[in-house]
Length: 28
Image (cartoon, rainbow, N blue to C red):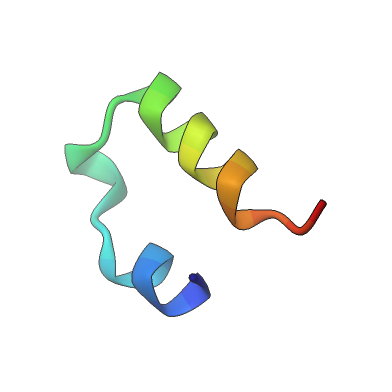
């Protein structure tokens, strides 16, 4: 998940989508 997150360009993601992605990436 971390590798995919690094590959994804943050500039192309909307702030809300980026926050949701971070929430999914973080361990529960």
